[in-house]
Length: 439
Image (cartoon, rainbow, N blue to C red; front, side):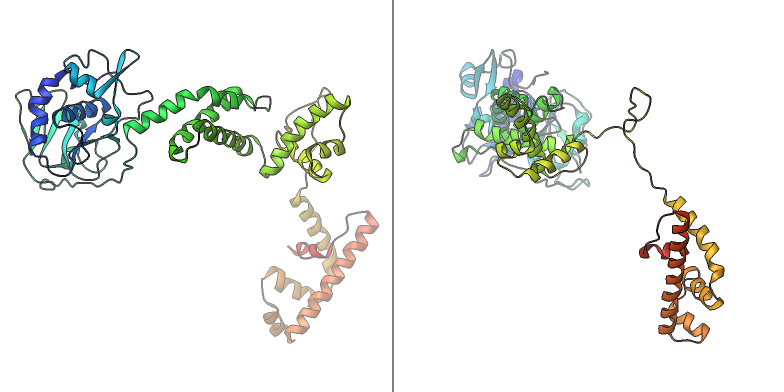
């Protein structure tokens, strides 16, 4: 990992960067925004704290964005702290596995997010990071008189920033925000998401990784690969670490166990079943599998449904329902063939278009048996889309008479279809199918 060069420039920080921040210090905390490097934010925070001490009123808040959250605790090699005086090093860092980790007093001041207003100092690795802000260039978030610190020296900076040092690493803003079209963007942040809290979360995860792995093993032999189950358990452990509140005086292992088991069960409920089945039915189906194996050892035979129901304390109907639902866990494929080359699953197929063609052919043979007025009523209503009132005006009758004639005509067709069907052994035409004969 590329470490910060700023801590190696301890004297330059104390001579060039920190004095302007200390001199302009007011009652409110100073704000520093580091883009792309957590180490740079820590370096400025340590240098500021070493000059004024960390107090709640006059401390410094360092925001970090533009980089991914660290996957390992932020630490520094001895070479990075070589120029830091031993007394300051012992005050703001602690040794851990041959590296140096910032003390909580420093880590609590480093916030993983963007500042909620104008800042006093922006720290960049290169000038190319100036446009790292989501809605405006990073330098537009500087106060008037604020400073831009570039780790790698460069002369290519905006015109509203003037150089302060000879190395081309520190620049001061001479105009007010917005003078050059830049607007200060207010981005809501979570002030509790500090580096200290983030590293505490990582410690919780590292300490309980074996717990997550052991809980995932409980669900082996259920059709899911071990790697997938462990991945689900690890993600649940990370979520539990982020949500855990030590103020409840409960052990994290207890909270994590409940969270991981719940996530694993949710994975089986939502990801492995091919069809949507209620969670209670899914859990009962899994319990039936365990009960069948246990009762087989106890009874010396295959247990019956009644044996399983008594063992689990549920009804026989519930056991039957859960067993049938278990068939949807891995449905049989239609492409699997048996030893004889035939499909192992026969699926009945109903061809609605074929049935409709047969119905229309039958209707075509029956229509000539109706009189002219009956055929006219059928045509106007089912083919032309006319209302019964319009048809009644056309034939010189009332709407009630048209309704009765229509019902009588459909009754005739239905009776004739059923009579012809019985003679040929065809299917019977039900009353709700009579309209389909006219389509």
